Image 1 (cartoon, chains in turn red, yellow):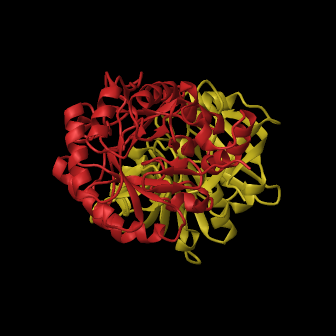
Image 2: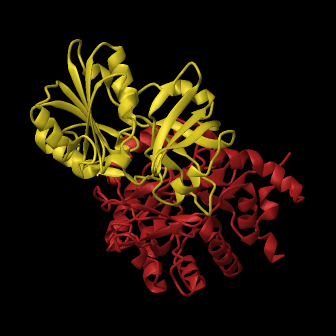
Length: 303
Length: 257
């Protein structure tokens, strides 16, 4: 019997597979396709204080092995999420992680406080790495001091574990990871998307209306593996790893690098059943490599 | 039961320059209930990751087959054009909301307006409306004579008028000019085509006629989860509708183009 369970701050996971924020809405659409209770947890779409309409379209562009998106944090605002989305999610036996975004420290703190008060939410994920908004977002995640200050303020205000989602668009990700750990972060999510751009050869204009967008998908997997590998060596808090995971073998590679659980993002758009497929395949892949639990595989590349 | 299925390619042939007719066979065809819905097809070529959305052109329930018509436009459709009968393609769908047929009452006339590669989803609709006993008029617009397709197919179920921009076939001009020229009388309109055409139709008819338009947008998930393909609906929050989930078919005055 292979033990898929994982225990993380605030999260008792049946298995390490977590749909990543922004790729799974609030779960409603995928609930029409399969039973969400199979999942380890769910990370819901980023919440801001006020409703946001996001960026103009086109918001999606494709590239080899990946996609660029510039959605721009479209969401109905924290109050509507608490009122309309969380009661629906309560019917599932599924830890819910709330992704929090904002323009200012005060906005992050207020949104975090309101979400943390809700019993459906088991942990927060601070989105300091969205590349598609003018203010806030990635600006908080590319400077170690700013990231640490924000983490500390949110920790003070919110009584739930805080995971900080790191941006790969930095020179030294270890420095940021250490800074947020010292500021009290309970865990890390990494990585968010890489800033990219595509230009249409016919029009000479960028394909995305926003100009730039975040690159995700299999193309970024080696970047994610490298960054998790580097950070795992230098921090003690657990890592939820993400970036281009397509199947159970990819999950094992992330565990080897140092992730304790994984986020599945873009792959949900390619195979809408990818999360249950990975959960089905994971015991076999672990057994094939001589493991009887997830725990044994975490950080295996460092031994 | 999964909404994704490896379907068998029965046919994939060029019917006009760069325009292909693809027929697929699979169990999930029996879920295809409305004209105007779409499928998201997975392509395996050269690092392509996203599925491609195609509107359903014809549903053949007894044979468990359906048809899409596509134009080779980029790498994805270029790859698709190389697929041969006997191969399989992974199809996700049917997805989205199609044309509401009961919008048309007994004895009423439907006007179908198709622009270029926007024409296909209207075909299944024409078949159904004709089958219900309604009068159907179809107006199709193309760039030039070479680009014209499905005129004969539509004529099985409707009165067909064709316009080409360069006048090399049928009426010279766009579909709206042709409708004006013929002084066509109708009760409900259904349209699919380029944004400029849909905008002009909305401007001309949104106030006085009932109608439905089918929109196109770059999509990722196809089920409403990623918010990649929103369109503006104006008014109160939420300001947007998702083309893949609340659409691709919208009432004529439901969205701001």
